Length: 412
Image (cartoon, rainbow, N blue to C red; front, side, top):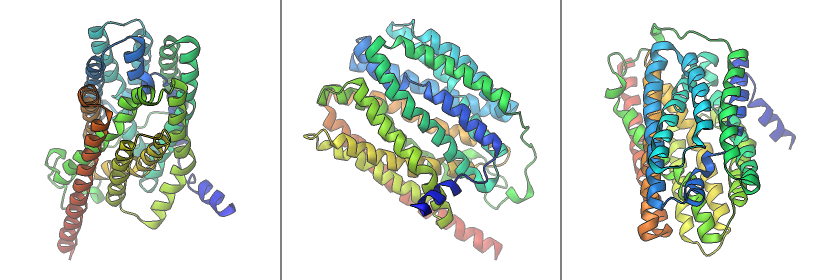
């Protein structure tokens, strides 16, 4: 027990104070993010939209995320990550408060498009900020600490949100979402000072592979983006079809759904940081960990085909959680490491956009399949998308091995 405790504490050593402050601000923001895990339920059960209409609204959610990621990356390269982070959260906080007063289909489509276009400018900027606020050898752990803060926030948020919905409905959640965005970014500006990113490429950053390449010519990175997209398509089902499935298949309330999200976040809070630290000590390759993640997240939906027992929801959530813990820190780390100096914003924007595109495809695809063919068909097709990500992961590993051999030959 003592050894495990020391390993856990050791995993937090060496991180900068700026990363710790960023983690605190992220926790405050995410603890207040109560609407998103229940958005599909809110649209279906409170506003009484059809499956198809909910799917289209979630498409606009994904399109907004896609637009926000792209502009966030471009603005980060032009004006710096700090300004993008501040204005993104401040404006999106105001927009979240306004969202509760919109109930028409087209009004919600365009309101959510606008909110996510602004809110998701934050993510590529935040990823780039870790290049300034953490040492290269600590970036994966710094990113994992941010994810820890996000998931610690999700430990608090969904479970409390479920109780608030049962007690007083959804409106209070919009106020909490908006105000925590505003409070968290004001706290960030007070605690963390702006750092200018260097414009000049360092000599040691130049390799045979990036002397003249841009992100659009990086074939390895595009295979990686395809894998990230497919993993995202599978993963985002937990925010769209699964909460509705809980109610329609097993009669679960928002509180029970909140408890399943609580389980997800609690496992991540307890295990992810020491696990990533252990992976780093053992020198595991990011590409192989991404492969393992793809296998687990595929299984997490294929097990739902055995729907006679409600306990399968717990098994599925545990598989999703372990896949998330292994895959997401290392997809982030892979993208950050692959990014070329001076183009970090574009690299991280495309990475964020891969998940945003998944958020466009996943809900509409899933809900349309559910409406026409049922949940079991959807889970089977989602599992097959995961299997495709597994095959591409094998291809990525092969390409990286070939790239490494060419580099060794060039050096020799």
